[in-house]
Image (cartoon, rainbow, N blue to C red):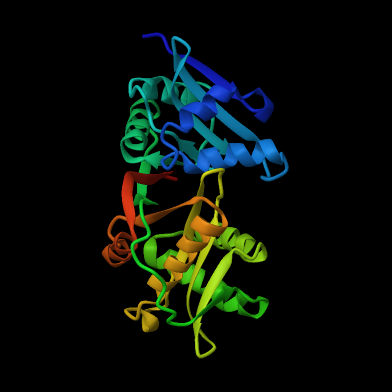
Length: 286
């Protein structure tokens, strides 16, 4: 099989067939779809330079990667896993440097295994996640507390919660990784996309919405400090945000959860989320 590799670094050069391919598995390719949609609507949305690499066979797309340089590669689902070898070889031959790769578990593992065989460089599995999409909102709000967008005076508290959450989910997180995640969270905070549940004026849980596409919107940064857990606060907040996304935004809620976070998985499945895919983030060994 003779695969063709196309490398785009201009949003206006990327053919619409790429969007069509990604939308065959919209939840799995959520980040890439959102990135391309936002860049088409507003080229200044992201800092950095777009890279989109497409592998085709007989003019039919087999796999797609997207990223804003120099960040991690987002790899799509694969129509033909033999194309992953061609993709990996292209990255190595053209000496494209990537810190990590995120996407479906099988595709990422195959990419990093071939990379190791060809270059000797290793990636380590940072974490495995389950990707969920809301099928049907099964429960309603119980009005445990008051929910509102985060206030400016809560910034320091919520930033601290974010750091605690990252180190709890990924214990071996580097300071650089924590800083990157915290910076992204603060952008959501500035956009009024962070919501806080308070009980008697005491903040007890938070969550954010981000990454909106034409059909989907993500719930992330869900965190309840240990002393407030087991009281239904996170459930209340997530149900509120699901209702908001469904009815106000007219979108489908999606989210990611660490595969070993059984307590959170129980909450999401109780709300009505269904597992769509297994995803992983592999980071290059230094």
